[in-house]
Length: 420
Image (tube, rainbow, N blue to C red):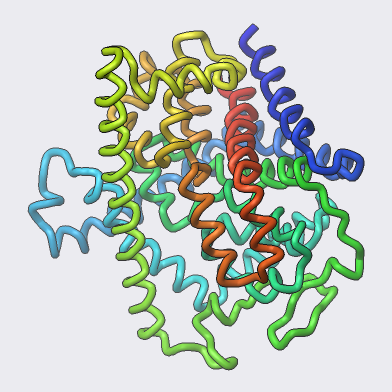
C-alpha cells in the first residue's frame, strides 16, 4: 500500500512539473526518461546492493574522518569547546569547514576537481543528450556549490540565451556544497546524505527540463573559452582561471590562494551561524505571536498542514507524514541546518524514525532549496549577466523555488522506493 502511494507520489511530482511547464511541446521526453531510469538504477544500486551501500558508507566515513581530523586543529585553539561531553552545533558541525573548504580548494588549485567535473560532465551529456554546459554545471554544483559554480561560469552565462540562464538559476536551487557535507554527516545519516548528491543532480535535470524546456541547436551547444572564443569540444565549461586563482593566465601563489580560501571558509561559517541563529529566533518570535491568538497555533503546524499532501505521497503513515511536512516547511522558510540540528539527537532512533522515513527525510533536507537561496542566486546573476537575463530570472523566483522543492521531493521519493 505505502509503496504504491510512494510510486504515485513520484508521478504526481512529475505531473506538477508538467503542469507548470513553460513549453510542454518542446519537452525532451527521451532525455527525461533516460535520466529518470539512471536515477532509479543509481538509487537501487546505492541502497539495495552491499557493494553500493559499502561505497556510500565508505564515502560518508571518509567525510567523518576528515571532521575528526579537523577537531585536532579546533582543539588546539579552543580546547574547552572540544573536550566536552557534548559539543555544540558550531563546534561539531561548522568549525570543521575551516579545514574542509581549503582542502577542496586545494584539489581545485591542482586541477583534480576540474578534471573530475570535465569527465563526469562529458559522460552525463553523452548519456542523457543534455546540452554540454548544463551537464557540466550540474556536476560543478556538486563540488563547488551554487553561487560558486555561477561565479566561475561567468563567460558562458554571458553568451547563453536568457532562457538557458533561467535553467541554470533553477538548477542552482537543488545543489549542496561538497565542502559542507562533513557538517551534514555529523547531524544526519551520512550514507543518505551522500546518496542525495547524485540524485539531486539527476532530478535537477529532469525537473528543469520539464518546467523550462529550451531547444539548444548544435551551433549554440558550445563551450565558452577564456579569450572569448567558443569550442564544440567537451572541454571544461567554465572560466577555470577564476576557480584556480588565476589572473591573466598566471596562477596565484599557492599560499596566497590558501589564505584566501581559509578566510572564505571563515566567512561561510559566520554566514551559516548567523542565518541559523536569526531564522530560529524569528521562527520562535512568529510562534509567540501566533500563540497570542491560539495556544496550539505554531509556524510548524501551519506549514505541516500546507505541505502534508506532498509528505503523505512519500508513502508515510499519517503521523509521520505530518511531522515530515512540518520539517519540510521549516526547511523551506529557514534552511536545512535548522531542521538537521533539531532532529540530530533522535534521527538514528529507529523507534522514532523508521528506515523509510529516515532515508527520505535526510535526502529531502540535503539541498539548498529554500527562500533565502533564491535571493543568493539572483544576487549572483546580477553582477554577471545583462538586464534582460536578470529580469527574466527575477520574474521567475516562484518558479525557481518550485523547481527546488520538486527536485527535493523527487530525490526523497526515489530513495524511498528502495528503503523500507
